[in-house]
Length: 306
Length: 261
Image (cartoon, rainbow over all chains, first blue to last red; front, side, top):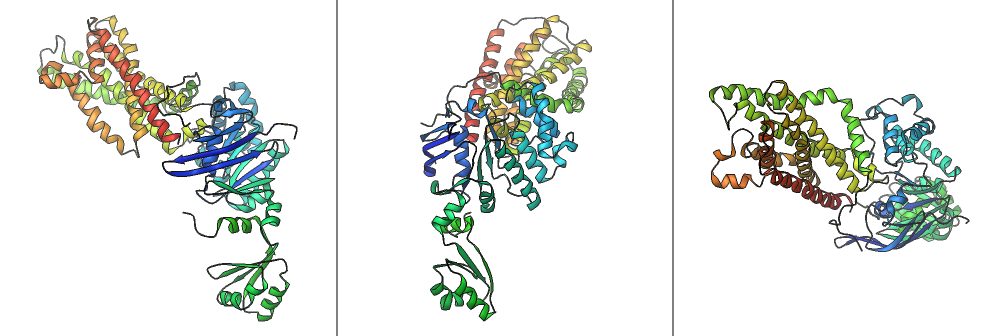
């Protein structure tokens, strides 16, 4: 790697009261990659982002963002970072164009510089024809695209995206993914938090799975799948699935998990399972390759996180 | 290693960006906003000034409406700064997440809180000055020394903007601000010499009134509009400045506690 790592965190810890939210985090993001921080709700993803931006001080540990120690020089670091926050924070009193214009000022950019950048950003967000409409009339997807364009106003080297597609419909989500790929092609580095494993698998070069404030697995998505889990999955649904698992499934798969009336059989060789299910004919099933979601559920468990 | 919320503020000129953002929003609604801000104080001034004033010979050596003018200039400044710092500030901080968006840029919360405070003071400056202009046009302001009231309006605005921002930092919802209005703003309207001279109050209440910022704004503005510089002018300015600086510091610490967790 010719360029220095845009973000290095070592030994990060952060507690609120007696509750430790981030418990000894070490990670490094490489230049030009998309790094995914995955984890269930409450795993500490957003807190980690806030620590890296210098918006909250760690109890211990060091952070270097774009070569600057954070939080000490967070202001300088932030001038070269773009942020897409989890919750919409567009200015409802302004038009799309004004939102971009005003946000540019926060970076001490001259008005004419921002004005020159706006057409490209509007084009990138697919909002050129709506430039002078107010925010209230925009759909969720349009708002997200505008938030992404706003995060690019300072032409950042590093982008922080906190659950960028949560709450979007599939069409809008695919558009965001396509735009993020474009940014990667332009050489930008992305740090993405998400709990959509499909999103991480599609976009991220490397992911770190977080749970209760710690990284419990790290690597390329396909490497994590090979390393942590059997390659084939047979899902069996409905009444009778549990009985089938006891009678046949468990002894012919390497590992079985259940939630409600669904059985997940993990195996290297699905043939005997499928043959038996076809022969019975009374159980619905789905045969597929193992995904990052299977790894995630294996490592973080299937219990609800509320 | 976590730094204290009470770390001294670090100022930068970037607070101006926050101020300019608010100015741009205000400009879109400037006319209705100005009329709304003027209507209330003018109704008080004319309603009480002419209605009640007709039954009084003179108050504190001047016509009642003349007496009232200086008080209303100060109280409308207080109202306007309080509303802006609380209701509008809370919208930007809590509802619209405007402050969070700004903090992702190279601004600090110190810049944001200062920008909001100066903005609320600027808006109240317009309200106070508008009342001063109307009173001047009506011939209620006999002395050009009234020009000295203009910076006083801004200082008064800063003091109340800071107090309002403390409430904003503590507030769970808009309803919370009613406590401040009922327990602080309304008592000040009545105890600080806006409608009648302070010496009409019982001795204990007079002493208490001396602790309130509005008392000092009125005690300085009223002699100034009639052409007299009171010997205690420096005390009044010092009290208002202390309120402005102190409330800014407390508001900043409380907002840091709220947002920089």
